[in-house]
Image (cartoon, rainbow, N blue to C red; front, side):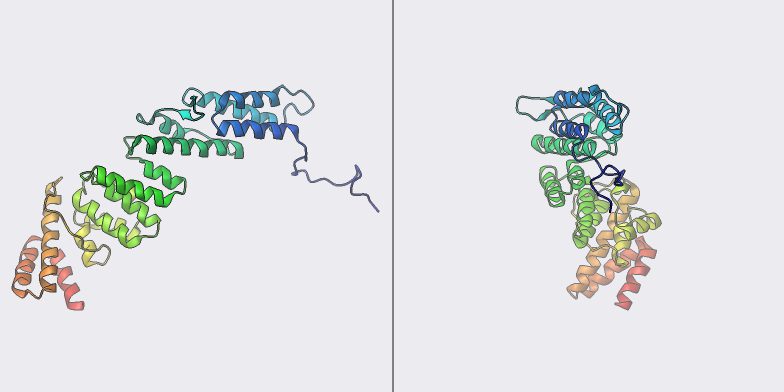
Length: 300
């Protein structure tokens, strides 16, 4: 009977030795790297490379070389301050651009640093009240979503809405987050608001509602709220009086939407004379929309 502890026992080639010194040193290096103690991390990674022996070209040595490259790449941007936190500015978007473009190795220790860096960038934005991170309209709420902090992301957008109620892009931000948080009803309302107030600068990357995307492709972003309501894709929402039109198409679409709203409210109040008048105006302004609206009433 073979002794499993003997040197003749079959070993799993994928199993790490229980006391792999290089692996333990690498783990300490990664721990320091994730804490932004980059100089200490470099010492650990160099220690792995300085160990001579038959396994000089081992996977651990190659991993240490890649980790040292990461240290060198990030040292200029991630500086240690007196409080043990990374000290950098997010206002220029420079660090996030580097983060987005950087090729983080598919190694657990490097991914640990990647996640720590994303948390640090996000926390720095929250601390400074800095909502937008770059010209592509990437926001602190987007970074919170990447970190899985969905509730916080929604709170941050709503707080920004209070700070800057004129920023209509925030409707799209909030709608995207709410859709991903399975708050579909609220998301539809905010998609409608975004399209009503600023269809000219629609951020297509924030459209995660497939039926709405198809509607916009077919009817355009300006008329999407009106057609969206008669087709059951979007709810009918209140439209403020102070809408600033971004194009002639937008101005026309807003007029049509107001007529739809007025006709529906008059119908609810059983004010038939007003309802008929609003419908006549809608038919003259947008015959196709009127036909769909009238068909909706007949079938309803």
